[in-house]
Amino acid sequence: MKNWKHYAIMIFIILTFIACDDKEPSEQSKNQSTTITGLFEGSYSATVKGNMKDSEWTGVADKIKNALINAHAVATGPSKSRFGNVFCFNDVQLIVEINPVNYTKWKTSVDGKKMYLAFGKLNNELQTSVNDAVMKMAIPEEALE
Picture 1 (spheres, rainbow, N blue to C red):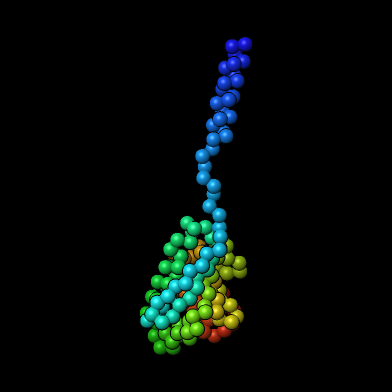
Picture 2 (picture 1 turned 90 degrees about the vertical axis):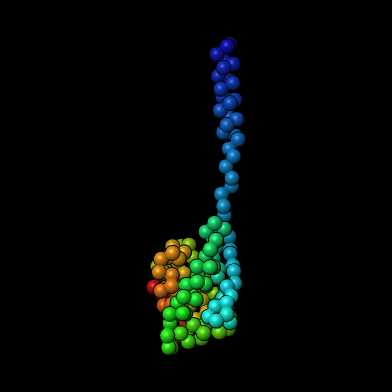
């Protein structure tokens, strides 16, 4: 009888530890959206969107804004004016995708109003990617890389 009580107490303790799992619920992806302003001498803006976790979203808009500003700053001649042509109506959407489909770095929409960026490339060649995408957006046709 004594052994039975010991086993019952040990089972109770084990079940208590299993039932008291203090793990926080995992973070869920959700639609995120931020307007970036102050582009190209302060007169242009764009909307950055993505479906991702808050921890993934942190800093995304700032990275893209800085890459756009830097790409514009080093552009010359017709390339520089294309930034203004693309962003002049402040209706451009920059969509960041965790799992891009049919592209590895970026793609643009046929109407020249959407730029899709691969999340995995935001820390690698972003300035080059946004520059190349803007050049393609200035000539409306679907492009991707």
